Amino acid sequence: MQWFRSRIARHPRHALILGKLLLVAGGVLVLGAVFARAGLLSINADRAAAKLPLLHTLAQAYPQYPTWIVPEGPVGYTIAAVLVLLGTALTALAEKAKKR
Image (cartoon, rainbow, N blue to C red):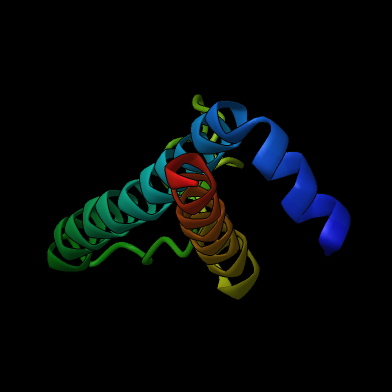
């Protein structure tokens, strides 16, 4: 841990950029998952009205698009949350080192 803090103290600008990048990446994943879930619920509402079987994943709803990047389960949400937390922590440490 001491190595990590000394690295941030030597290059606080790089750590700040990386922290913000991780924070934005995690946020985009979370927002993408929310919008994807809303879209899937909308598709399923139309399918239920037409008495068709419901879809369970985005890959079933959009087979032509690469949906592997959008978190749909607990593992995906955990990864997105960890990215947000790491980005927040790294940004806070870099700002503290930058003030010194």
